[in-house]
Amino acid sequence: MSNKITGHATEQATKYYADNTWKKNPKISPDSWRLLENLTIGKVGIGTYRMDGIGNQAIALKNAITNGCNLIDTSTNYMDEDSEYLIGDVLTAMVEENEIKREEIVIVTKGGYLQGQNLDRFYENPPAETVMVNDYLWHCIHPAFLKDQINRSMERMNIDTIDVYLLHNPEYYLDFAHATEMNMEEAKTEYYRRIQEAFVFLEKQVMEGVISYYGISSNTLVAKKDTPNHTDLAKIAECATFAAQEAWGRRKRSAFRVIQLPLNILEPAAIRNINTTAKIIDGEEEVSTLELASRMHLNVLTNRPLNSFPEGGGVFRLAEGDIMQSIVIDETLNKLTEIEEEITNTLDGWPAFNDEIVPNLSLDAPQIIEQIENSVHFDHMAVNFFHPQAALMDHVLELISKQQPDKEENLTDIRNRYDILAKRLETAIKHMAHKKDMEQCKPIDMEIRSRMPEKWRDAPLQQLAINTIASTPGVSCVLCGIREPDYVKDIIAIYEKGDLADVAGIIA
Image (cartoon, rainbow, N blue to C red; front, side, top):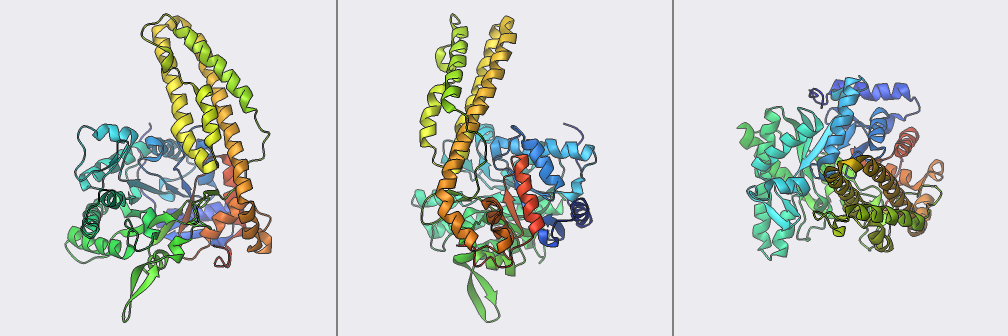
């Protein structure tokens, strides 16, 4: 990678970014911008949960950055670290080509997960206070581990400062405590102790200029108060207050400024659940997490604007399917079968190999296809089945090439044909999943449109869903997975039409 990108987001540079974006597109509404502390950010940010650089993702990321999305959210465990590498590659190229300045971009990342490569690194020597959730997932927020993770994140993204660093789903400790029948009162005390210790460390990282602000990303900030894994924002804020005093040696406002939580039209728990307390003139008042965050002047990043898991059950993708000609899945599977047989025949007579190492995508895919219920489920299968199958095939062909170098040209041809077919199959299944989404969401779509202002009723469902949350008072930025260049068009349309005046009548 090129020279390290220095600096961090600044008030002046982010304001310039917004002004320059306006200059390029005067149609953008003035209410498309928010403040994260003193930093100007677009109300829609780039969520990279499913972004690893495959396909057009780098182009999409660059387009989003140049069209008003200057907050990028990632994590060490997103796409097994490839998300951070993608961000580093794109930002480095854009900075070197003077298309953007580092100071214009707000970078948010998180730490806590041990999965994939990260788990492999620590498997023989786990960090202190590691929660071993299962064989494939551990979790830790101990300062020594966080220090390691911060350094690795900066290395992958080729930066020397992180603007916002979040503890990532620390509630795994409470899940583990509940599952193992620990005393939950004692577990809660230990939970907040661990968070406070992590906050002391993060305050010191702010003192050293490694990060600018910190916070917490937790799905259970919005949970009902009596839920075993509920994370209480009021208690988190107390942890930060004590942490700042310990780190600085005096009373001082902490650098705890950001929280991240799920919120969408069908999951309004952040607004509706009264699950924490706010101080008032004559005592305390029971309020929602979003209300308390607003009163404390915390910045709120929301995730999952389109993937909804409502309390009543079911999974809904709040987006319209792509309009493309359907690809014949059976034909693609037949061609994949031919290639897999061709590779198996190449292995004949080689004792170092056997047929079992060749991926059987053509055999396994039909069973997967039958199970997929919607595009949320498809995304999970893409990451956990289709992408690993492609990686395994690359590995097999590389092994064969080393054993039979005279067949390298033929193997390259096989690899190219396989990759094309695998991608075609994945795309076909993706569109099949989108069609299921549209059928499931028809009643919801009609209901949402009936609540919308006239000028919004013909907009695609995803624009309605995203802008409703982006227009919600107290929300600083909505994080969206902008994996395709066409998705940027939705964001531009949202920016041009501006905020919705009344979201209370839209959210379920």
